[in-house]
Image (tube, rainbow over all chains, first blue to last red; front, side, top):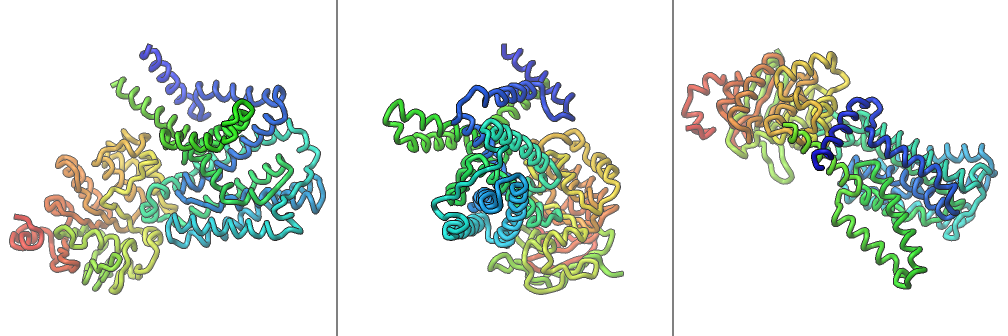
Length: 346
Length: 235
């Protein structure tokens, strides 16, 4: 039986070599086709809250991946990452509220989100990449995040302060099934784009920087420049995720700018697997689904009114027993399996 | 002829501690120079000071007649100085291929020829080319570390104790490779293994307590057992 299992794995690995240009294995193909079918059919057989939940998972996965670009590929702990996400949501909300509820305004809002995110990343990078280490950078970014949150809270005439900003969205985003598909498409496009970035020579340099910055420097790399590129990519992705999140919720509030919002991204990458990119997708799904299940359980037993207690315990268990996260664990198991296969051949 | 690298009265420190007090070295193009000395005399610090990884308080550090003190490390590397650190300088998260390709600078031409030359020198790397660098042995890691410098047209190669922690048979192979490299590239080698140093270098400098105390031809040092005993502990 074990032999049969190994032969199957070997066959998949061999096939993987044949289809190398497609970068996908037969097993992967079956998995993704099933997943695609599930995701396509789901909104037609599920209720309102499930559609919103899955749309949320897709969008937050992009936000998580944007965080992983920084944390997982450069080792930079950005505690002000919510600046991009929250501002993206606010910019869309402000534009649609003040300049009209149509696609042209939305396109302008998205363009503004991109420009804003790029500028914010530039300013943040100029401050934190001056030196001082990871902890100093984390503290400075947290302070920057608080500044932006405070501005949003006090600028009531534009943001409506702590009450939050409700707004109407263009017609094509009103249908919950359509926004579900847009969110899914957004996830696919962003995953492919970020994957391409990670596999590019720049992405490889970022990995080298994460492992040993000094070595990358004496190879002739201006590592600050590369970190800035990573921050730009992460900022733009998070900004776009924030914009999508606003279109889904039709609401933006200062919670989207808090440190807690940044920590959500950090937890998604931790649970899914830091430095794996796809880990954020798994993390986003795991966290949102667990949270949703625990909230539903409140109707079953009053003990689940304290659902946060269970939620926290699950986090602790995952981090304790899977320090490299779900995808990290899967990757290491697969690597070990390949080594065993090679040894078995010998 | 102006030397390729000129170091005069160099004083360098790590934190509050001054490690190099008075170092004077000249290296001409095409030479293979070895830096010798006991443990902790400042040999590695000297290479780090050249690369700008360690701050220099005073003195001259000129490469191709241009002062490189206070220049950022990546700029020094881009001027054509390749550095092979004692802890190998290999990226474990990348494959052997990625480790080599990431080191290729924009100026480098005929990359395929250089990779073929690397495979010629180190056939082990050809076999392990697609493998993760984390799976390499100590000797193979050293080979990869040297290859990362060889893949570019560096004018000067700094090599820090390549024999450290390696089996004698691997050290022999490295010595052969370094001798081969020194025919085409200027090499500054820091080494404790006297036999390896003699096999590669044509000139030597001895450092003692952060100062260059002796220099000359390696063949003269081989004959001078008193000097070997006094500064290198070779008996």
